[in-house]
Image 1 (tube, rainbow, N blue to C red):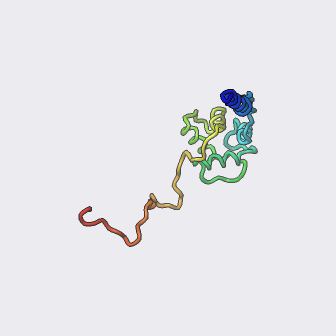
Image 2: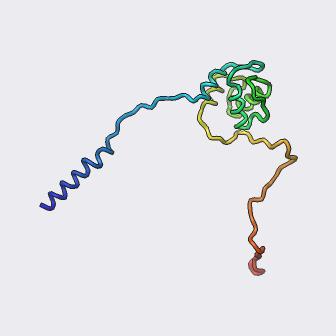
Image 3: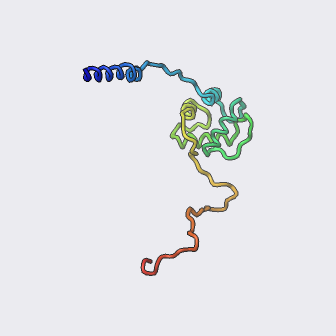
Length: 148
């Protein structure tokens, strides 16, 4: 009798408590295009000298990843943007055109971390700056003579 009660309890537990977690319903995920990707798509084919809405976002992207240092906050595709796009295309092994082609657009649309590709020194620094990544102990303790 005790065995039947134990078996019934385990069966009840498995059927009503664990089974609902084992049922998996298929779901389809809807692809939602990021607004930056839509902006880039609108810039496809733009070349130096043209103005188009969304250039500010492109300049900000190129600045964030180290390709464009000083940029004007307008929708003008200037020489600095062209040079930055060429550097981006070289770095990512794309066909170097200097304008927003399909290949460049596709690469920029991919998700990525926020680490810059190009690290440029600040203009106000004359040379390499090294910061100490250590601290001293209080009282400046020294090794014993026998352990030096």
